[in-house]
Image (cartoon, rainbow, N blue to C red; front, side):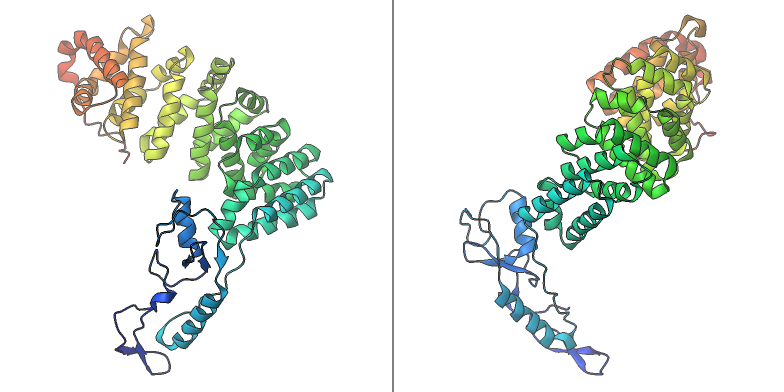
Length: 438
């Protein structure tokens, strides 16, 4: 549709050979907010009609007044203006030859009561282990969601997440293989409802639910794995120690996460796996050191270094958070010392990828140099000097950084200074043999 100030002939012709006319939308058919043709006109208590999507967005942004009159709105009910909508549709039909498409008749938005009733029926089906009935209800919920963003918000805000979490736990507790279809459907729906609410997080963090998600990670296709690992990431984001420990009690979880990081099956799985590992190694659980030791033993230090070579920014940042955490334990530093890539890569990433990676690079080098074992006799410091760390750290202080990073950079410079004179000629900051990460 072409908008203009007046009606005039257009040189272009339609399929029938007739010249198209530029059209002007009548003012009464325009939404006062966007000045676009209204598709679903609704009238507020102030008597002004707006397009539903536009006025809902207005109120979602925290506004409490009528956009046109500036009156305080006390009744937020929106009454569909059917007469105006029919007039708009008739106008569209009249101007079809000029390229105006007819607006569809909008579906009636769902109400909180509709959602409550559907969720209640989902729970009933779950209690009776009626997987086919549950699948039908969840698919109905998905259909509602696809109709509009307003429907999606209504579903999420009125207990759907908790209801589906309870259903998922019930079917997973019964039998994963027997209830596989309904479990897949529920997990798929939960993915578009994230982030989780606290109640749903507790339910999905149950042993039965966690076992089911790990089963999906082992046996499903890539899409199924993505949905399961996103759900796990959401559950662990609350930092509940019980869920962390319950997950690691499941056989093969650590190995599975390392495999996903190494193979990089998909960007979604790689990023979620890194985030989950970070939640595990940085948790306040009493088994935290045990978690770190286990991951280091499985080769996580080398896996992270390989990721740092050529990964994009967000993956690189996630990998760095894990690497810095692993260096807090002796075994992690030991494996880092043994890898020839460690110091050159860490120095290379300073001021290269993002401010966050710079801070973690400095922190990691600081940990390796400050807590260096006597048997290494300052090798980390010497190697850092050889690949240009001294100059990079000076630049970090010049361009600005957090107070913590500033302290670590300053301390590193003091530690390196005694070795600097005799190694000045060895400094080489080009790193031509390393791939650059953009």
